[in-house]
Image (cartoon, rainbow, N blue to C red; front, top):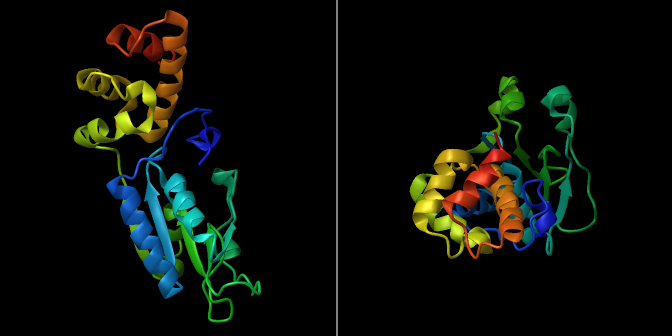
Length: 211
């Protein structure tokens, strides 16, 4: 994954950390594709739904036909019945995995993975009842933050765990997108101040850009 793709922030040197949620998503997507079924990842904004789907699908692209259908204006998105349609054969491998896209059917031999679609799907009981796996993504717990964030970006690699906990409590709240934004501002602060590492004074400057 390129840095520019991470949670809508240009963040050089960011890494995708294999969290328990990402490992679970990988297993769930594998099982959904094998069953030629539908799956929905859902959770709060910035919890890593689309990231998890994209990472897991990228691993499958070498041997499967992966299609992505994305609705940019989500508040005005069409009802699920209007976009869950058979995909048609592509002449490549048998399983077609799509994000917010195709409907599994015997003729297309496809599976569908939907991120951010739980509310839309649940409006239509006929579709909701066909979801093979629902996965709910949540915030990182405080202990997960301390395990994950030092691996996420070099600015946190040698940071004091107390400062990471302070940053999470004050600004990031276990939210990956918030951590990406905070990390970008922290990088700027390190460059401008000449501080050798993250400390609470520097973090307060970064917080001032988030309030």
